[in-house]
Image (cartoon, rainbow, N blue to C red; front, side, top):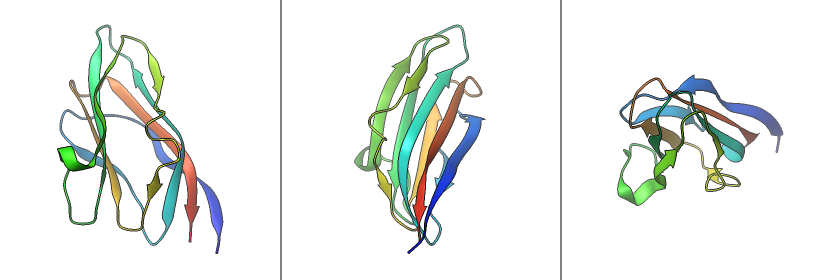
Length: 111
């Protein structure tokens, strides 16, 4: 068994519809740090999902639900810390407005 520290999601801005930002491929991942930064001048909401293989974002797999992030705030997401992402599962997220909220995550991958 190998355990590797990994940048799970390189800082990138969210879209306005559910998009995949990380997929556990032949590994199980654990989230150690997960942040959302609102770079806009107005509050924005964010949803984050952990989705099973061949699934899609839904209420059943939503981990963060319409979290309001104030203008220029960085939110460290306690809801995601320690979450396991089994092989084939993926993280999807979306913001109420595209290209204004930055997602970033670090963790480990176990193979």
